[in-house]
Each structure stands twice: as structure tokens, then as C-alpha cells.
Length: 393
Image 1 (spheres, rainbow, N blue to C red):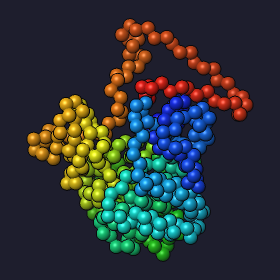
Image 2 (image 1 turned 135 degrees about the vertical axis):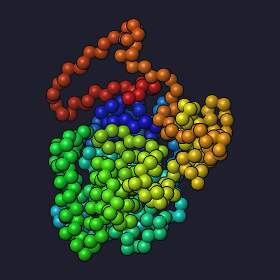
Image 3 (image 1 turned 90 degrees about the horizontal axis):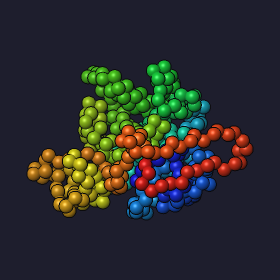
Image 4 (image 1 turned 90 degrees about the vertical axis):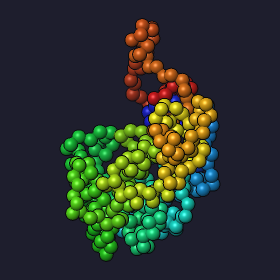
């Protein structure tokens, strides 16, 4: 499965994830081939990108639970967008508490891990979808940690509203892929204004603002390498920081492609000074990572498939090597020198050589002429390139 930005989509590519409208109605099924008209629609939706199946890649299995999870995300995010826009105008809508209750009812009492499926995001809705996913993660983590209901509800509510300040951020800043120092200061000021707004609207529940502010302080200290031993953030802030980071890293965003669950988990485990180990452990218990059927790359360069999950150390499962069908239990001492580097990014083993490399080795490659830019009737269909299997981005 590959992540492809919207501007690089081509006819013939197959969808790895379904596309729904705001009412949860299925528009494009998995395994659907993109057409020129479909790509135009996706541009209209403003999606950042899509997850695409490789030419020979089968459609990954999807349980009824997975389908319901995706539908819940789709249906809830539009209700959440209405409520957050009310909050932006200093109003507290009644549905916000209903959303918290729905999240807790569905995901705040689970005694099993789930496939945490990342949704498709656009420039317009990425704040809402990030807030919802972070809240779902907070609900699952707080349940594993056996946090009392009142604090669990405050943490989930804080996750839903923690980026309300970003909704007022000028598009010129919010839609930039790379922010300079001045723009980062602008972003920080809008976030701070959002926290003040939360404090006013939720004046009877001061813990919600406290969780948001302390989580932001944890992230700010981490970015500049400051370790304040006198700073004691509440549990909700620590949970929010882990959930927020995991979602940000594994979701599509304006700044680039998402990373794998393994890469995100390694980041969390490598920084216990900000991500409390017991909270990261609770995250591991909540979402499926390196389960049977996942293809991985080892530090030797060998490719393998997970055949048994390791509940004690999720990053050291039992795998089957593709090279010689050798079974390796990475939990055993005899394989202590082996480790999972990451989930395989592509199942295609063909070498990819760019035209610049070919020319450097004396191989003639014809230059492609730049297309002339024409502005004209909006109804004209845009030119969409045909997808050539094996061509990656």
C-alpha cells in the first residue's frame, strides 16, 4: 500500500481505502480504479492524498468491525466540525458532550485491541479528523490505565477541543508545507488563544483547559530540549500527548506522507522523558501493531511476514523470512541481533532507477516537453496521466 498525494494521482490506480461522503454513504469502494472523472472529484473534495494498492497487491482483508470504525469516523467528524465551529464562536453546543459519550461507549470500554484505521483527510477537515482520532485513542488508553470516569471524560473532551485555536489560523499559514520561525510564532499564538477560549467556555470544568495547556507545554519543552523536573503534568495531559503524537505521525498531513505504526511506536518508546512508558504500553494494548500477516523489513535487509504477535514485546514478533522460509522468533536470544526496522513500504522488488541516473550512465532518455499552461473554461476536464504499474513517487 502506497500513500500518493492528490496532485500525483493517475488513472488506473486502485483504491486501498474507501471514500465516503459526509453522511457516511460510500462513494468509492476499495479496489476501485481511478478514472479521470474520479480524480477530478477527489480534487474537488480537497483530499490531501489517497492510499493506493500496488499493481499485484491484493485488497487487504477488512472486518465488519473495521467498516463500522471507518463509518463512525466519517459520521462523527461532521457533527464534530459543527460543534467546534460553535466553540470557535465562544458557544458550547449540546452535541459535544454527546460525541464524548458516543466515543466512550464504543471505545472507552474495550478489552481488546482494534485496527486503528487512519481516515482520508483534506485541507479543510484535517483538524477535525485529528481531534476525533486523538479522542478515540485517549478513550482506549484511559480505559487500559483504569482511570476514573470523570478524568476519562475530561481527557476525551480535551482531545476533541485541543486544536480549536487552529480553526482561526489564516489559510496562508495553515496550508503551508513548511513554516518559518515567524509563522511558527503565529501558530503558537493561535493555539494559546484557543486554550483561553476553552478556559472561558469550560469554566466549570477547569481540568479540560489544564490538560490542553500542559500537553502543549510538554511538546514545547520536548522540541527545545528542556527538561523541567518541577513540572508535573496531570495524567490526562500525558495521555493526550501520546495519543496526539501517534495520530499525527501515522496520519496523512500537509507536510508529507504518514509514517508506519512501527516508526511511530519506536519514536514514542525512544523518548520516555515525554511519553510515559506506562501510557505507551496502554497504547500498544489498544491498537493492533505487527499482527500476523504484516510484511516487515529486518535490519539485515531481509523481508519477512509476521506469523505470531509478541504480547510481551510487540516489536519482536515471530516472523517467516521470504528468502528461505526460515521461521525466526525475535523474542529468542539466538535472534537478539535481529530487529524489525519497519513495515515494508512496497511489495515490489523491482529496482527503481530515475532518468537522471540513467543519463549519468550514458543511457539516452528523451526529454519530456513541459506542457503549456492554459487558463480557460472551468468545465474543461483536466488532463490526467495514465498509471504505469511499477512507477512510484
